Length: 150
Image (cartoon, rainbow, N blue to C red; front, side, top):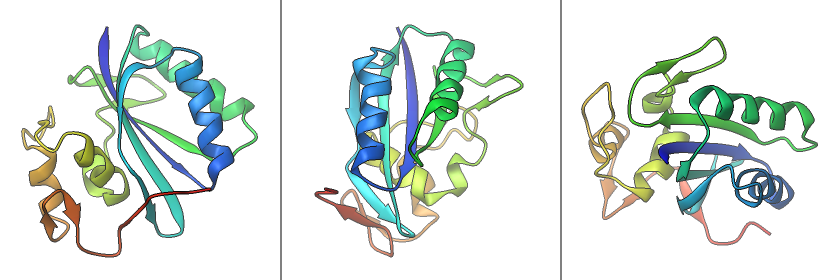
């Protein structure tokens, strides 16, 4: 099984249900850890760290298929695949803008702030520190956590 990091930016609970059905009920991702759901610039964001049997290319194709067939507004980002640099025509791992997009970085850090980025060799905690106050596992700024999105 390979470790993958995925994030999604979505609008409402129906988008989240679609993501849940696609990734977890289909068993594309298993044995997962999930961040809290966060609000950021009028969108909701959630991150997953999970295991998959799918190859990098197969996972990209699954995500592409979901985006083409869905009736939701959810965006999916494959943030990292197996902790090593991977490239294809459709995607790169780690996601090139992961470290400059706080809406993707902060939920990931909530899962495991000690995880080290394979290229920058910095922990997620160190990378989030560049965006402002990161104290006790939470960000003090416009990024806010949601307990319930229904």
